[in-house]
Length: 291
Image (tube, rainbow, N blue to C red):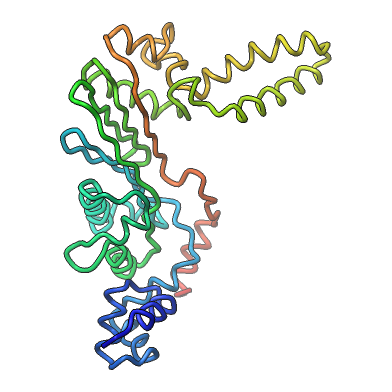
């Protein structure tokens, strides 16, 4: 009988999935060192060596099933791998598995069962097979009502994915809103969603700018209010001029078509991840030299 603590120890040392660690320990009678060798021979523990690499490429994907939808981001190290069939298969498996499950966090999602072990085991196995660090970064599940529609849009082959929910209109309008969001990068749907501390911070910056421009404090205060409204237009979906008709806002476009924006999820692959800058010629030289 292989204890859970032994499996945990091997997992921490090898970076392999729980099921693979259990199999390895069973194969070698519980010897940790021999189990590590067993995993290496199978090509499974390669994933551990890749743990410190930066995975900032990949795919953002959306899957819809009736009134439920999911948006996910899975990362790889290079754009080349993001087009790999093995990687695309991983993304599809993650979407299909998490969409019908009750997982609320990535950790819970990674523990979900698939055909051979868990999703975490699958990510580790794909990492070993593909040869790059892969990472299931984030996901969000969205549920709509029968009177609402999903707006689904994927840009640049999955570099940007947007999932909107619109009340009272059709999918064509919802898709237009998602396309707009992909292009204009709004952070929020409406002004009411913007945290008060974010606005206060912006006001302080804008006031300082106005004073530095030589404006008296009372004039600076009035200028700030105008500039805050401009800031809302930059960050709020409803306030932005609609890309297909700059004379109206996105909210007006939706309203003119009998609808109202309920929610928006926008994923841009690698956003917020510090990407490693590397000289391409040096990278090729490294590969040629086997480094």
